Length: 69
Image 1: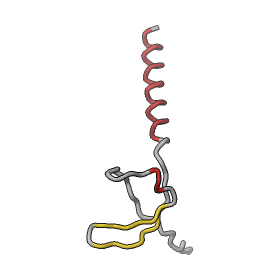
Image 2: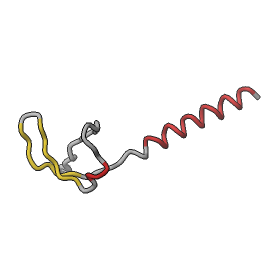
Image 3: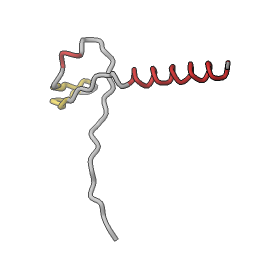
Image 4: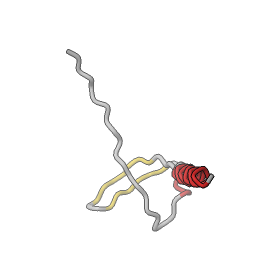
C-alpha cells in the first residue's frame, strides 16, 4: 500500500512539473540590430514581457540541403 502511495505521489509531482514547463510564453521576434552585447528585437507579443525579465533566446535553425548518393 505504501509503495502505491509513493508511486502515485511521484507521478503527480512529475506531471505537475512537466505541465508547468508548458506554460512558458512563446514569443516570436525579429532581430533589428546588434551593437556589441545589446540586441534590439521587434516581437509580436511584447506586452507579455517587462524590463528585467530573464528570457532564453535561440537562433533559428537553418535547414540545409540534403544531399543524396
